[in-house]
Length: 383
Image 1 (cartoon, helix red, strand yellow):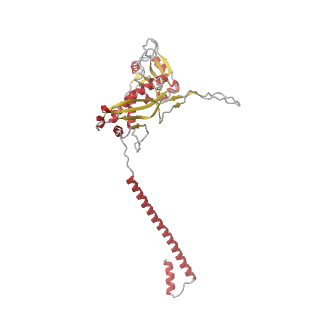
Image 2 (spheres, helix red, strand yellow; image 1 turned 30 degrees about the vertical axis):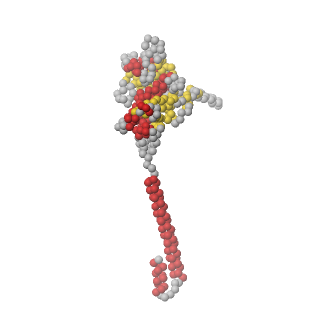
């Protein structure tokens, strides 16, 4: 602009027209000014549009924030009290892998974990086995190998022979329903000072824990789970004149009757009834050393002949006539299938006249051992 103005001012002071060179210089300056003005107009229009979009977006977000409902997560106490008040008819407490930062979970998981913890305390099978969680209860087939392929020497130029692994028949896991009814007075439920979660969880955990642990231990597989004792392979039978108990040599023989690969896996342990553990605590080897080693803390299991010892009150007591009081093997080889989680249903009508609310707890499970050589049992002698 200043350059073009100087040329025009100089020609005006000399009272003359612009020559060709001056005209070209002024035209070039004006053309450049027009180009800059067009760019400025475009940038100004873009800036105005960005401001309009930002304003519209902000208004939209504010509107959503105001109108979007806020859903607060309910505690286990709130869920069970809602069940009592009839606001909901059923609550499923499912097992979920969630972190402390997770939000929006439709069902709290602490009640489920609390029940399962109590169930594991009254019996070890849900703690030491491999537990498979499924969302539905159709038959679950578990494959297993009975023999591996065999490698052989093949001389130069000859055809390599085929050797395929062989499979056992499928172990099929169903979903047997364990359930019971429990009743709570309306006065107790209405008392906010009472932890209804602890009350129900303790009752459910003990009732289902004893029933399920017993089935997963000694069930015969007929319309019930096949327990670890029934599914285990035959290991050692005690001698006569021992009152159904075992000697040090028989205990060692039982452990080494299992598959060598199973003994190398983490989770190999000895599981026994209470009376069998009493006998183990006084059992000595040939050198007069006790084979039982007590644990120094609650987090570590006691040990017998160097292996973890698990007490299972559902196992048979030491007795003659083939009582299976001890098993040894890789406990995670026993497979437990559970469907969904703990389900609670309620009824106001069942005991209406007594002022009681009836809860029904349901837990669906099954279990079996695909490879019998991974766990073996000791059976008491004939006499």
